[in-house]
Image (cartoon, rainbow, N blue to C red):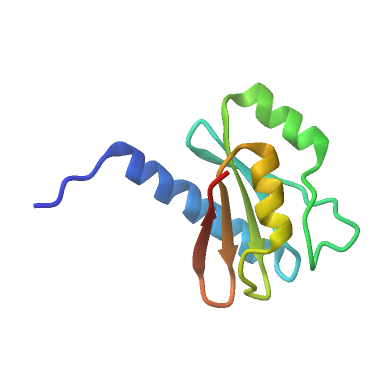
Length: 112
């Protein structure tokens, strides 16, 4: 029998909610945060939300008040791989980034 850890279920829960948010936001990129092991959806206020994302600062502040921000999450509606911008921004935030590629329904992860 395989051993499961509570953290494994939490990760799957936030990914499930983030994937739903990505599908709802399509064709725009969705944006969110992982706060206290749960997905915290945010508004994408980028000028070109079909190509990039910018988390609304009010949403980010609300997430900070809600608890510990553990990761950044966003979608790639066109299914592109992790961009150089994503890698640089991940390093700057010092948080893991999760990218959901919509066409192939796959998760990409970037470590700071």
